[in-house]
Length: 207
Image (cartoon, rainbow, N blue to C red):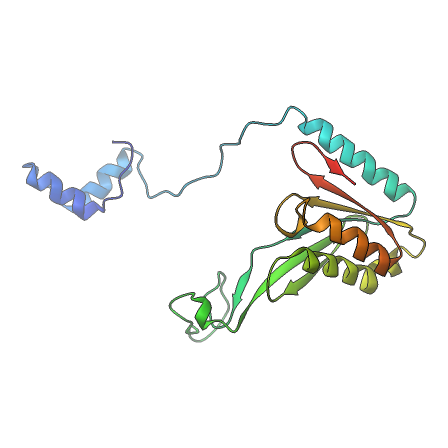
């Protein structure tokens, strides 16, 4: 046997049907002796690595260094998992005299809305900002988050900046066909910066 979903009680029942008198506690002890335990899946198998993987990171690193040496900002952006807003269960614990009761199901109909966090990280300043949307993960939301970061923080950290480098993956609101057309029009116009976007995919895509 390599694995089973059966409980020790069900295994004991099957053995009893086969004429082996054994209880569930004995089954549990024998499984433990054989090195079996309740386990979860582990994400360890990596996919095939792109032959251009190292070249891609070196290329992006070179771009970052050139922007930074000229006093220009470099930001890394990404959208995180959306969360329902309301009386829902979340991981974590807190000191309390009694447990707080929450909804027994995570239905959208029970939510007062949903929050979509969009992160902007500035590696030079080692500072991060999170902007929360309440509708959809769109390119307009991504662009507005980047513009807000510049207006509230970026322009004060980089007062002489003329260019902005945005590092992003190729999914969701950061997709090549979604964020790029909007980003150059809106970000450039509202921030007075010439923006460049480096998309992290098998081969680096830069505009």
